[in-house]
Image 1 (cartoon, rainbow, N blue to C red):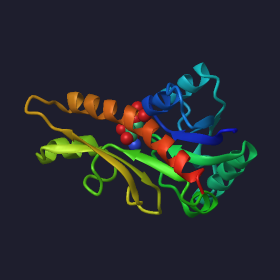
Image 2: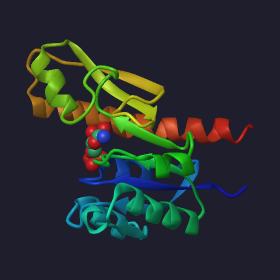
Image 3: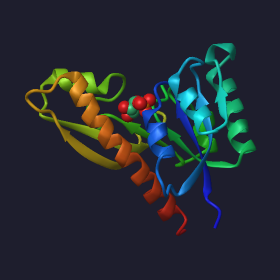
Image 4: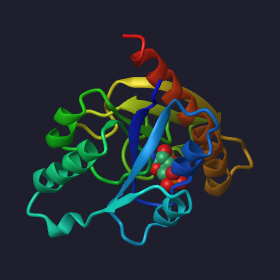
Length: 191
Ligand code: GRF
C-alpha cells in the first residue's frame, strides 16, 4: 500500500521536522517542507534529507488568503493529504483550513488549554506551575484551540531553568509527534 503524503510547515529550527524524518516506520511520506522564513535552519535540514522546500514571504502577498491559495496549490500539486505544523509561526486561515479539513495538526509545548500562543515554555516556567507538557491537536481558526488528540505531561523540577525544561519538553515532543502521526494515519486508513 502506498503511504499517504504529508507536508511539514515550520518556521524555525526544525527539531520536530527532523524527529519525523528520523522515524523509522513513519506511516506517511513527507514530500514537502513549507517555510515562511528564508533563513530558518529547518531549510538546511530538509535539504540534507532531500525534501523539496517551498519558501514563501508572506509580506510579498496582498493577503493571507492569497498566500494560502498558493500553498493549497503547492500541496495539491504533490498530492499532500496531511499537514503537520512544527513550529509554524502563523495563524492558519480559512483557505487552508477548508482545503484540509481535519487534516492539519499542530504540536504545542504546553498542556493546552494552559499557556497557548507564543513562548509557552517561558509562560509555564514563570507561572510557578509544577507540571506542564506537550499537546498535539487539530488546528481550527483560533490560536492553539483546536480539538486535542494527545497530551503528555512534563514535571517542572526544582532545579530547572527555562533551558533545561525546554530540553525535556523537546525530548517528549520528538517521541510524541511521530507516535501520534502514526496513530492518526492508521486510524484514518481504517475508514
Ligand atoms: C516546538 O516546541 C513546537 O511545540 C512549537 O514550536 C517549537 C518548534 O521547535 N510549536 P522545532 O523548530 O521543531 O525545534
